[in-house]
Each structure stands twice: as structure tokens, then as C-alpha cells.
Amino acid sequence: MPLQIQVLRWLRSQNPGQVLTICYLGLFAFAVRIGPGRPSAWCLAIAAGVGVLAWAAALRRARAIGEQATSRIGSAAQGYVEVMGRANVDTSNLIYSPRSGVQCIWYRYNLYTRDGNNKREWQRTDNGVSSATFEINDGTGSCNVDPDHAEVVAPEVRTSYPDTNTKLVEEFLFGGCTLYVLGEFSTIGGANSALSLRDDVSALLAEWKSNPTQLKRRFDLDRDGQISMAEWELARKLATGTVEQQHRAIRSQSGIHMVRAPADGRLFLLSTLSPHKLRRRFVFWSWLHLGVSVAATTWLIKSAGA
Image (cartoon, rainbow, N blue to C red; front, top):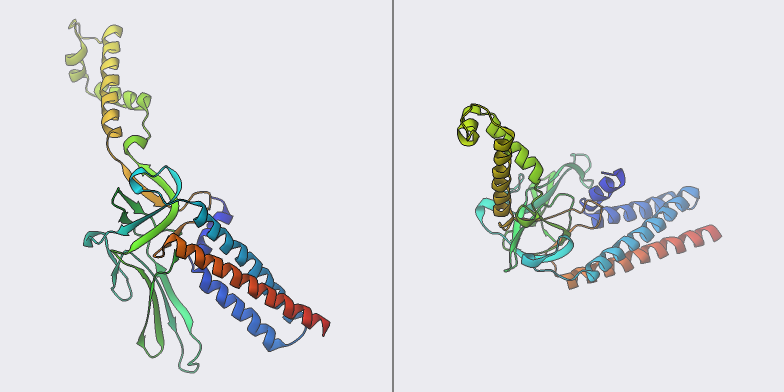
């Protein structure tokens, strides 16, 4: 997998809104602290550039959501789709947050600590995110969701303080919630099974040949102790018919539907919001990022003219 796709997936799975907010605040705070000058100008230029990139990214997300019609799981086409369904509440499909023991279908946590001398500054000392698959159902069918590399929007956030110098921030998706999923839909098994008649016939014939006594009992029709070309051709035809019957049985099964991160790096979203609300949120963020970029650019121009 290309390195840029791996980096993109990592960034999306790290709560982009939080990362960008910290980036903006850090750059502006540093610019204010050091005062006018070249380093301050570089901070403002970087903030303006990040704002433009974030504006474009949020706008792409809004467009990606708006361009996709919600598909029914039972009839969804293979490929890039959006689906909505209710998350399974079966306890056998639920997992537990390793820090608080909360039962859920997905979690992400960040643990922060501070030393006794600096009561204001929190430092992240541990973090983690679940990768267990879970199931959603929309009434027409069910599919499994592999949350690896997903950008999760609007999970439930819980903050707790195990002690005075420790803060735990956890994000959850719970069983029973209605979940929006935008990603790569594929069906494993069933009609989409990747089967090779030639390879499977060869494997079956090899299995029969591994037991010569049984092979001769079945196909040595003239009982001369040898398998002739005509007799071997009969065995091959029987093996072909057997494998074809097995393939028909496999393809008649329903298969397992799965939604996961697209291999080409396209957006993979999970959210408790509806597509309409999710799109409005990204439109709002796009304008906010653009506003930050404009503010940083204006500040930069004024600083240069001063």
C-alpha cells in the first residue's frame, strides 16, 4: 500500500478536528508569544496554509456524502457505498473498553497525566482504539463493519478523572445505535466467491490419487490392475461434475457482507449522525477552516505592513 495512503488513513483515525484545533491554537499562541518578526510570520503562514488544506478536506467530505445515495444492505452494489443500520446489541458481538470496562462496539481512549509541579499541563501518556468488527442491520440485510482506519464522527465522549493527576477521555459507539457508514462494500463468499474449476478439479484428482486402492476400486473397470487413459478420463469427468456441484452450492449461499476502508484511500466514515446532519457539519467546518485561513492571512499582511 502506498505510503501516502497509510499516512492519510492514520490522520483520519486520529480525530482530525482535535488535531487541527491544537495545531491552530499552538501556531497562534506561538505567534503572539514571540511577537512580530520572521518566526511569527512563518507561524501565521503555516496556519493559513493548514486552514486552506483543512477547508478543502472538509468540503470534499461534504461532497462525498452528498454524492452518495444511501443503499439498502440487502441490495447494495459492490464498491463504494453509504449504508445505515442499527448496531447489533448481542453481547457476543460487544467488546469492553480496556480502561473503564464499558461495554460497546467501538472505543477510542486517550489517557493524560500531569506532574505535581505543573497542575495545568496535561501530557498524553497512553492511547488506544479498538479494531474488532461489529454488525449493523437495516431490515433488508446485515453487514459487518471493520473499523480500522475509520474516521469516526460524533461518538459519545466521556471524561473521567481516576485520580487528581490523571484524566481519561473515552469515545464510544454503542450497540443499538443507528450508524452511518461510508466505505468499501464487498461480499465475501456466496455468489462472489473466487472459485477456480481447474484448480479444484486438480486438487480433487490429487486427493483420489493419494489412495491408489480406492482409486482402482472405483475406476479400474476392466480389473487389469491399471487405470487406462479412458478410465482416467472418466475419473476426470466425475471430478469435474463433483466440483461444479460444490461450486453451485457455495454460490447459492448468501455470503457475508463487509464494509471496510477503501484500498484507494477514499474517505471511510462512521457516524451516529444522519447523512444530512453530517454533511451540514462538514460544510460548517469548511467555512470555519477558511475563516481561520483568512484571519491568519490578514494578520500576516498587517504584520508585514507594520
